[in-house]
Image 1 (cartoon, rainbow, N blue to C red):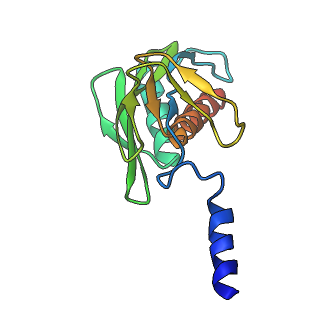
Image 2 (cartoon, rainbow, N blue to C red; image 1 turned 45 degrees about the vertical axis):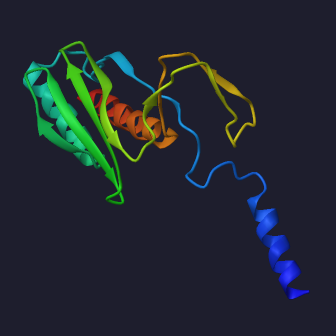
Length: 156
């Protein structure tokens, strides 16, 4: 009887588990030309724009590498296992955050129309050929970074 109960618990716990490797990848977010809005309404010098972006990324747990003028590379590391690197391009008017590379985040480009059923909604999502796909946590990390940068500009 004990073996039966244990087996039943294992089977019930596996119901709804689609993959032992975590959720399927989803469409990657990219933030293009996000307006820089300061609290004072003034336009910041380019060096100050860079400082706000670098400080915001660092305060959010991203490691920043020096890039060319108008660009910053930032890498986020989770549990020394999952990595994401983004390129942040900026001007005095706006900034953009784009995927550069990743490790252990299931990044790939869809090669056909693909459909996944997210656990949260149960609704199928179809991605056209050529859509960049990645683990959903990447989108959360990048959204948080964008919001931190915006918040920092708003305080200037």
